[in-house]
Image (cartoon, rainbow, N blue to C red; front, side, top):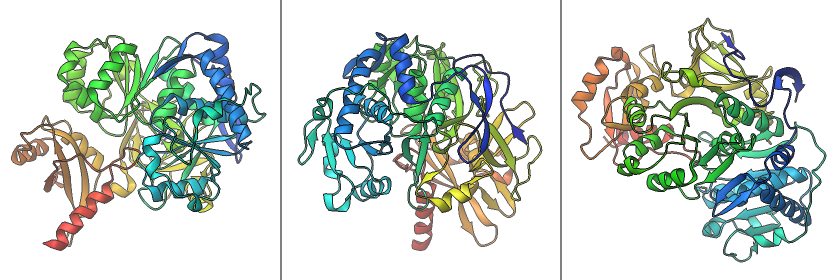
Length: 544
């Protein structure tokens, strides 16, 4: 089954699609009316909306003021020897300086490398060496994680955005070298940002996000969610992740909208306060955060009437959460989307008119996207049948930095092999069943963990869960579930078994349970680490 551009999306930014060829000869459909680079995108906002709010975080910057800072930063980075293709690592929470640095890098043809603030020292050293960054911009509270100079030989300069931590220099020095208003000559195929994948198996890989991919994805989000210059987004997920940077920040800013940044890790009361004060209209969050918001007593007294688009992805949205949000925030549409770092975020999005009727789907392919569903031999499967999703389009990255073997395996015939198992029905709705490595084989029967998790998350007592296979000498694997309870009452296992029996085939039902008192383990990008859960089961079995 192949799913391509549907006609359900409204007209919007980017205009019509036209055939183009990029990278290694990949044929694709691209927006005909788009800026070529991030620098051009910012210039368009400065021209059309000079006094409109661009960023709110600590201070408030209009597009004109942001452009002035970007010009100064561009000159400052040049003064440190950063040129076309040079790498600038950004190690900080959601600060205005991070976005300004990304735009400044784009202006001089350099590459921004936002890094997760959850990295350990050894991990950070590996990534800095892998990308070859010559400049690091960081915040003081992370100084203790910075690697010693002799372990990162390419790193020449360190700048601190707040209290200067020796031997770093103050960020203001980067702003004092004059202004650089002339953008570097480049193409839309140039790499603009490197984002590192989570590295659940082996070392993290640096996904090379191009100007073409970032701008196309930003325009697709704006188009599918009908964003305009009147929208204001709240970024409560890290800007070092593709969702925060592209899915929220650039999606809003590509049409002249504003962004409010939540600097520290998510805290629901702080979220509500910022969302109300800034009158946000758009955000993308994980389902767990919506559940926390729905259970916050202060929600009843918080004015969130402006909030109209609540994007989510990565897990099913519990029905109880949808119903509570619908009751408290009747103007908010909860819309699913599906993508990855390798697809510069969106591959699919849920049409706004259909979000209530297709809650088990991640939507339809965004403009220009192409999905093939194939079997283990690489043959297309019929509509509705499951297989691995192969994804193509202008949003798919050209490859990973310094990873020729991974590039040869993961990118074939213009398609990226996602490793996700899913289906596309006759109407074009895409469903994600599981990661291929997370599919459980119970006595020859395929069990998609995501399907079981979807059922369990509909139970009122379950806050979040993860299903894994546990080894079995007879069946090969059995179904085990880790559950985080919604409240102190815990889990009634007998009631949950009965709940599953009414909704799942016998071979899909969890046969054993682990109730956790702490959240599920996640990596730096927020994905559940199922290998950690499997290790927990293995260690328990060895001790038995």
